[in-house]
Length: 180
Image 1 (cartoon, rainbow, N blue to C red):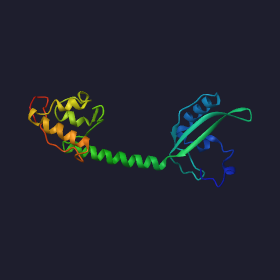
Image 2: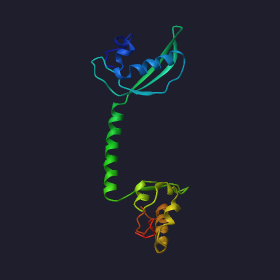
Image 3: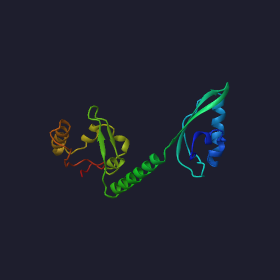
Image 4: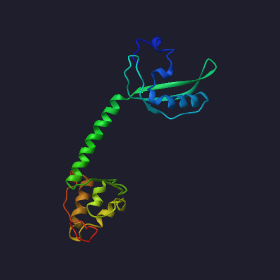
């Protein structure tokens, strides 16, 4: 909080370190905590002694202090975490937009269950609804019959460790029954 020691912080009025836009929410939370109720952690923007703000995750628990209801508060500075998250989100957004522009898609599979998570482009580019694809077999049944064996073998070779990656070309049936 920008204090030189804890004595400088002890006795500080709680609302003086709470961003004005969050004060009503904090008052509600303080009321719940003082009545012994639990509240979920929340993101706040506390104000340091010098007036600077920072991003924080604040957890508060009901407690008793000198026989009176009180709250025990843990404040974690998450400024760097949020900065990293935003940087990764921006990179992800740029990657996604490049994939859309390049008419590309990604998918991943749980090799034990065959369950698939796929970028919606994987289905949309072929004219299907994304929710149609939740299992590996939902994709393999659309592979051109002449390409089936090579595609399935490429996956088996990758999963067994014979090949470092799954790299195969195949034609897949689009919703209009044409293969691309």
